[in-house]
Length: 430
Image 1 (spheres, rainbow, N blue to C red):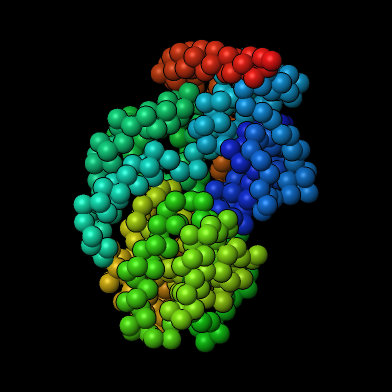
Image 2: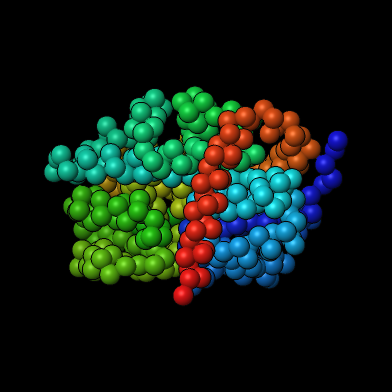
């Protein structure tokens, strides 16, 4: 039996989207725009507080509905809404609300937006902490960058976070993966059926105007939400190891660091005498990126793909990063800048790109070509919609073939349901 084309999507957000603060917020907006372009009705709900940089979803025609954790009021809400598709924004939302969705809207397609594999990011963070504890050398982190998938699996497999996240992936009918590397990790090492996964990278409209030229740009730039641990670590590595090497070569060099939710520990690093400027939040990230000559992304751990690097390519700004920063971003395409493994190599490549106009122009052209080949909204948006429609039309078969997911839903949802009901009863007690 063919399922009718869906008309209503409910998104359960971990946070309210902030596209100007994080890549995750930007990706969520790209997904929502793909749904709207297909003519679907979208309702966005979240138990989170409203952030200061929150997108105006209402202006797009998206209904906004605050919800609460451990509150049976959600049951009434979803029974009345009767969505065709429920999109969980990160696995924690599936853990909290998945059993309620299954109980009250069993025929709704359940989709998980992973954003990135958080268990992979956490495992890499723990490995970096072990490395920093074992050695004072802050120059070379080659042994941490891009290990074999089997090594990543072995480091993740026994962690509570990985077990929770992989179970959530199994329980859903479809999982959106931003990174092809993470798709292969799940398929080859965790043995997730490929049919449960859909590659959905960052999606952009290609720039219509030529980027600002080399001679109109100045300085180095780093940008990233300070609430995201890899970004804060990158700033620390810049401050302690990379930037002093650049200043040795270019005594007048200036580094501008932008990021939402700048904490006091970050503003304490501000030092104009060293050319190290902590600038807080950028009202328009693309504007400041377009004014910079080189984007710096010295990421020592992380997962997914990097929104700051996509923004750099959109602005025609070459970048210097690490294998973690470049992971899953360019396939067989040339990298629009340099991929480095040590602080010294990072500094050398950054200086070269800053000073060598011919190399800079080549990197800029590579970035624009990479966007056209891998990140077009008009390619990936329709592909996402088509995959969801295919899943709706074959939902019965998909669920029969995913016995592991059915088994995990049966056991996990029972325990989650009873815990949630206990918390709700406890909260109501006088």
